[in-house]
Length: 476
Image (cartoon, rainbow, N blue to C red; front, side, top):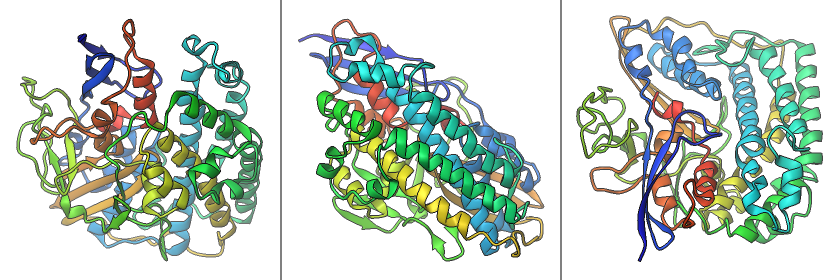
């Protein structure tokens, strides 16, 4: 029996710093320990500030999902002040947020995930030359059109939000700019152009047809675009059984509109969806370099342990729902929402399921964005000014591209007395809890193959990148 320890990291093509310590026996991972090695402390920065500063400070947590952070902060402040968005304001905010999530999915597929399959280690595979031609970094024929489409989509954020990232357009009472009829036409034109690129390059067919797939067999039978290439790679490398997580999925529901959230909220496990009760969240700190005890985010604090004492091994806390880990992300959203293809993929719960969940969400999200753009009414109100938040508490829950994001704020005397954030990668890349239960990515890595001479195992990278970690959000 051959046993060894590997320290893998820092990972490239990952937002922020990540190290993973592996225990390997007989060519398989037997234990994994995920470390977020860069502490940033945004929760500490917020203490004592005017609550409205959250709209400026917290989006700076991340340059990829800043609108998600902005939206969560706005919803939390709205609860404190009693402000709410008029229907058209909520619709414009959903377009801003949806465009950012869509662009994130495109970046992940084209720039972070697929280039791994263009590596020389896969030379000789039937699909390798096509992967090289399509997804070699900076040179692949798929990379340029997808990233150009992403850049054009951000013009929508420029129209509605003034800039990206770190727009201040989303406020507790709505959005700061009311689009006119010309803006609506430009948004619709941009979305149509993006649809053409996606249907030509990525899907090789109609988005509506892909969104209507209802089984893994139907996914395997999809013959168009790079979706078919991904399916061929998945079958050859057994990505369906690689990186299986807890198969317990959480979503708070995406895109709050006047009539409710566009996707359902809940916790899926074993074929059933239970209600999501945020009161059941506890951030365990037993294996985090943090002082204090585990607590609900509304009562939690962020006090770093400068001694970095054992048994802790990460700056990331370990959020648990009902005492257990959950996986969040695009797949989780689609599973909780009850989409037939996502439900079929949930039983797999591995690398293929996560990537296919993102592809499914791309197709559905473009369709939703087109409907939202058509429903914009330039004659309506987009902002209802409200009082400044002073005393009280609030929570803002949204679905970032990588999964469920929550901001918890408490205010006293017109100042922030407490601010806690649970980010998607905090859920997925959490360390062990007090019971020794690993976080989702740690569990998913168990059983991953490791070659005798591999220092950065390719299978491990596939698993890690299937979660699309954003470590700067994790250690906010």
